[in-house]
Image 1 (spheres, rainbow, N blue to C red):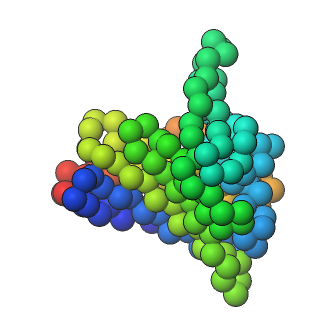
Image 2 (cartoon, rainbow, N blue to C red):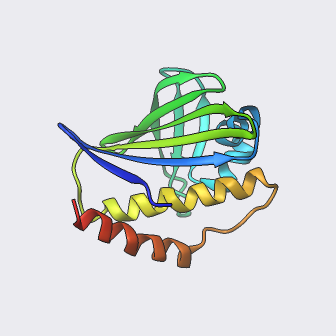
Length: 159
């Protein structure tokens, strides 16, 4: 399912809703524990998990280069928001009878040629996130990313 894109006064919010057949605790661990996090988002490394804390973005290009991302808001087992480019990304978890609901929102100040790449990247990362919850590991599926990229290009052209 494509993210819903909503125009706001000062930019856009992309929202992905993913029902999961797993507990909030298991989803939270997959979101915040480095051994699990790096299986679906290999660039990220949690350094200090708290509001005002740090997540490191590793370039993973062989240079050893990285930069720090600030955690903007945080509530254990429930909510994590951090800087993402000029905007932010947030993950919210809420319990459901058969698991939990993961809502990922990305604030995008302005659309660019990079926006559909970013949106399709998050889309595929959420597929990988679900695989990690199932105990599976997959390499980044570039073909899948390309398919979603085309769909996000079309969606953004309609805005």
